[in-house]
Length: 273
Image 1 (tube, rainbow, N blue to C red):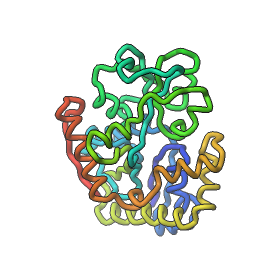
Image 2: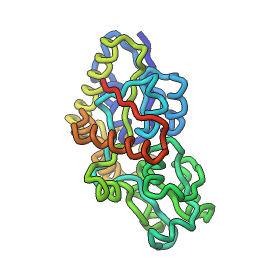
Image 3: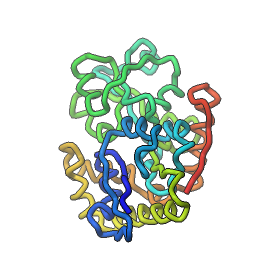
């Protein structure tokens, strides 16, 4: 049986799926084809249900909840850290209302958190891996950065204005749930559970073979040095990635409830495997 498993070409996702991708976790009768694409593209494709298993932004899930269940394994949770607003010059949070902010996509959780912070902020969509350059070139005033840019922005002479993960934690006392894996509902329930188990085993394998898994993930780290790559992986691959805690599930519920109450999403429905 051949199934498509889609995730972003980033060090943390590569680390998670190391065991499956390299065959250290036997996938039994399932042959996974790994599809690599940026998270906003995956969010959009999930609306069509193209991939049997796919990475999703938590923000995107309400738009695809008719097609996908959430896997409890594989989540990316920011525990008092998350997407950053960065700029060429230091500025106050109040100054943001006058600025144009580059965002990596309107279905990303980073974008949702930004709109929960201030729904009137003006934005411009730019691919996530071009945002830092856009800020440097003065194409935009501020960039909302995700992935490894959260650790490397200062090398480009940029300044942190706001950490949305910190803001969310101060506001709710909860971590900021950024990404999950979705599995298509039209798969047999027994198959969904088997895939969930295999992904969990792959994450556990990577964590117990960390050095080798990090070395594998470096090819997806876009030039990040090994120490920073290991730090980035540690931020987003942890116990909550093995299996979401009740606190993290509560955080997803609170995030989407607030988004619904603010009119930023049309519905909120959560179903887990």
